[in-house]
Image (cartoon, rainbow, N blue to C red):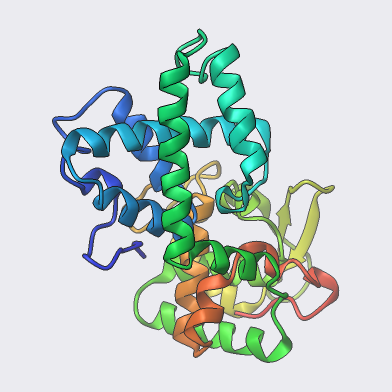
Length: 290
């Protein structure tokens, strides 16, 4: 499942002047912005698209990437749209005294003032387009109810029926275990274990921030696993993108939104769902669906 903006673009690198032949550090800047959660990414995409020239667009991309790198290092776990003016002050102070993390030297006052204006412009755009308000709603979003989980499972089945098995498997395991997207992305065939007895009961051992936890796998999820991992080596990931690439948290979050929409959850609720909202009950609740 690809993220799209209103014009059908899937990467900021597709905006004029930000893709090939614009190379070098700009590639890393594009990758950093493209890794943002869908809400912040859309805000960045429309903001960059509105810059008046190619040169200005490149400058804004470079400054936004510099800001994000500093923010991730200074405030791990903070959503970019939740950053405050205090964070921007600290970023500018660091640029004046030690550099921006790319150039390991203090930047001139005029340069830092220009960067402050660029970052402030992005947040003004995010506020104006409703992205900041939506982020606040997201931060207060509650975990799924039992009825919403039922709809999510229906959406998982529909994704699988439409041939989107990798997405269906990712969301089914997320819903069944309540683990993190990072832990799901690192699962391999070695984490599957058959139990003794009649039939083929299987448990999945997840190594998250906690101690390893074993989760029973339902027949529905087992069928998805078998279809997706057939012929795969023991150390290869259980979940892979349709193109064979490795999944990342952003891809899993997009898959969750797709399953929620397919199952009938309202659009606003589906777009605000994030993997951590499924952490509630795990093996002690109603895990094992699919």
